[in-house]
Image (cartoon, rainbow, N blue to C red; front, side):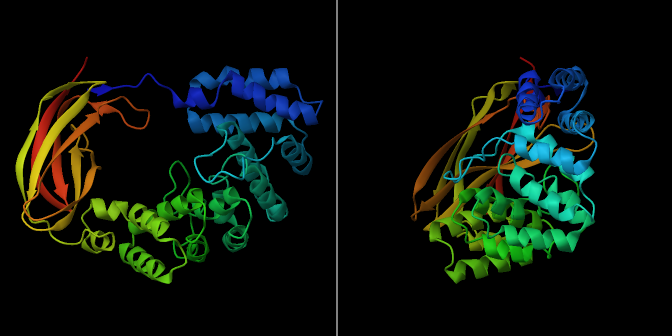
Length: 377
């Protein structure tokens, strides 16, 4: 039995107020825009549409109420844009989702050879208000060499949102986006220029890009990160972040080379003294809590995680690794760890009632396990 979430991300991101805001921006530069009819057509359809469908619907409505010619419509869109996101920030400034339909408009009506350069420049402007990472993939697939060349130039842009677009838009496994037709090797020159960036928003994208590649070519990623670490082009702290974040899938899988690169390559020599829970039954909305006590038989660095094996949904048994702590222990040292795992309803994952189990992982090696029952409140 699955439990459903009452929270709606699509309603938070795309609603009457957001549509009113977008229509108002366009009306200011295009007085002939029928803002009332646009708002009505968009909002009336929202309840029956999912998130990406809402983006497409708003884009289609814009096409209906803007001038017929793409160049004229694009000029209105670009002139209606609000000021760019704060260029002095370095992270966590994704922008407003209501501008996603503008990027899709460009991808839908301007992804042609005739309008290629103009459309790419438009996405460069829009991405300063909301990431055009999804829309740029239409152009990569239709015009791979030209678009990758454009994105290579974007790596030198003074605006970090533009620089991030070069890495994020070319990710092999970008969530919620279409698959790319290009080989994952083609964007590597972009990453080579961006890993030394001084903005976390950009370097996180580089790390996420590497993590995507690691799922199909872990050797390439490990060799690349080893070379980058030795280059001295990035600060030590930021290079550590990129390495750990870029190898997170491999470290969760216990890849020995990945664990070694982040400093946890040795086989753990420990004893699990105690593993228990005082929440063998957890209600939806509650949390599973457990206590772990372990002893180090020698001095060593330890990466302690746990694999959550969710209740079967009838097709497969979902699993996901979660972090507990990184430890540097001396010989004979005993440490007690406590963990609280909320079992909240989420828009990205439905919970299945029934037996769940955690399996301890230390430096990629599996140890003891513990189970609990998830029930309705």
